[in-house]
Length: 204
Image (cartoon, rainbow, N blue to C red; front, side):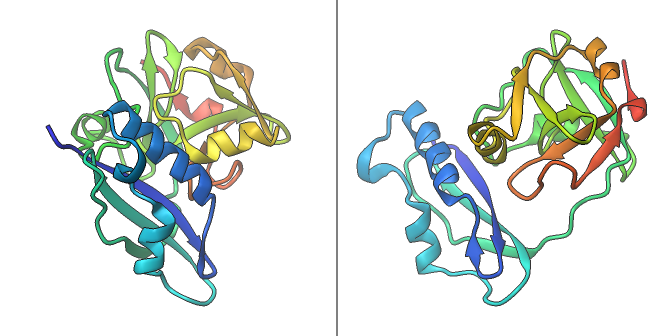
C-alpha cells in the first residue's frame, strides 16, 4: 500500500536549513519500503524546482512524498512557534511513528481535550519519548539531555547530538522531576525556544 510521508524544513532568509539531515531521513524512510537510487526523492531538486520565499523571514516548508518516491510541490507558510505552558504525560505503549506519516490520526487523538497552550508528552512503558510534534530535551537551561527512547528520529535532534550540543539518556517518567526544564525541539525549534518548567508537567 502506498502511504504518504512528509518533511518539515525550516526556510530561513531565503534558504533551507539542515537539508542534508532531512535528506538522510527521507532515504531511511524509503529504504524501509525497499526503495533505492532514483526512487528516493531528492529534496534539493524538489526545492530548486519550486523555490520558497526570498528575503528575510522564517517559513515552514512542508514537503509530502509517497512510499513510491513521488514528491509533491512544497508548501510554504510563515512560521510562528506555538506557545506551550504545560505538558501532560500520556502512556501509549504501541504507538509507531518512526516515519513522519502524513496520517497523524493516532498522534492527534492523544491530545484531545487539551487547551491551546497544553501538549502531550508521550510515554512508552514508562519511558519518555516525544510530544506530538517534537522531540524533547531536559536540563537546567545550560545543558540538555534527550530521551534515548524517541518516537521519531528528528533532524534537529540528530544534528544536536552529532555536534555535541545535547546528550542521549534513558529518562523515565519519574526522572522528569530531576530536571528544571523541558524544551521542545524540531526542525523549526532550538533548545530554549519553547520551554516548559518540569513542575508544569502533569503525570497520569
